[in-house]
Length: 237
Image 1 (tube, rainbow, N blue to C red):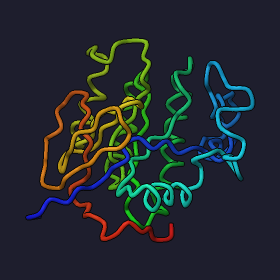
Image 2 (image 1 turned 30 degrees about the horizontal axis):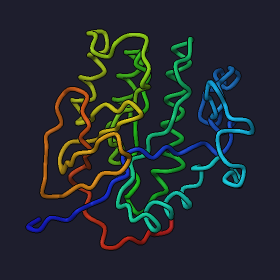
Image 3 (image 1 turned 60 degrees about the vertical axis):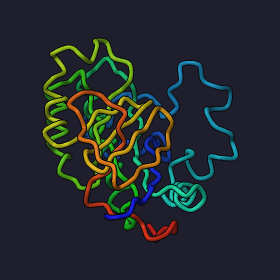
Image 4 (image 1 turned 90 degrees about the vertical axis):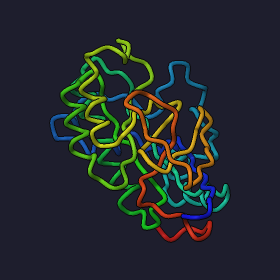
């Protein structure tokens, strides 16, 4: 493009399940019977829940794609949104944790990414770094999807992420052009990159490009085949 077009990207949108049991639809019969933490998993939970009661509606706030799209794209003027759903934290059973991550990914595809005809929602592949083999397998399973923009890991870790034990995960991500996202400050795919701090919104120009390094960064990027939207309206999802 000869002229710069400033695109606004919300780099950390956290969609929610409509209700706690919804995740079980995406688990195997064996894992459906296991105890799983609730969506609201704060250590010091506010009385009455994490959100204002009037925000719940038919499900948790942030659980309806049409409402989220309207708030982001129509009301706030955002061009693209990177969806980074929460998993269920660090669970002692690391294999169950990996299955939960896979279920979250399948739910994200089924409820948010596949029905989105606008191409303005991008996704995060949630992986469990405590199951290195499983995390690599999950990256390989979903990295080819055109709407998956990054991998997501929990911010807290029992071991520093710089240890060699995690290198197969980072190598798999880099091999597919995916950058690591630790929930609070996100980053995404290579090319057409602008700078994003821990603030959730970033203004990105299509004339600026920065190759993502093979280490954690705060570069917010988009796949190069995504063109700028012609207006701020949203198509039916």
